[in-house]
Length: 237
Image (tube, rainbow, N blue to C red; front, side, top):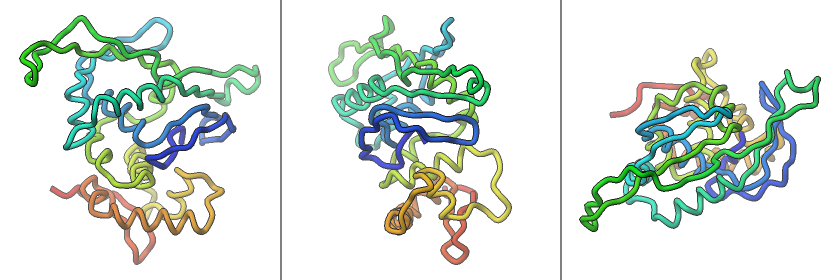
């Protein structure tokens, strides 16, 4: 829930929220397009190495990143704007073990993105282009450690039309097991958007999920209107 269930997130001012394993707050703008960038970098990374302070450095080909994000490819400027948001956002996490001592983890999701000494041929210019060295912050590394490994391709999620659909897809795919009979749709919406969802917000979320029904089936997620349940199915081919 550090990523708002929207492709046009608002700026958060550091209000506390809670999950099943920690309290957290976000200062900055983090939405589903930012999640697209993070997941895609993790998925296409050609190398990764642990840093002594708990961070991780990735070697990323920006051309592969753009292809993962969009069939028509994101512009360089758009990716740069999202990376700046990721660099600027601050996440504070307090786990149950930290409550008694008053400690917390305060950090960013990305520490830096810089050109790597490694280069590739650029087919557009005939010259060479640099790969990227992407340093993940300790806050993101901690969050990733609490999730299942990213075995699914983020490309189909990045192509969904609505942020609520992306947030629910990510929530479902990072659970190892489905509840008996599937998830209740209202429960899922509140899980990613917050318990304070109004009736209008719930109606809008349901409408947007119906718009993305075909894309969700491609991912392997089905919404059963008759039972108001969400379950995993064999993804369409």
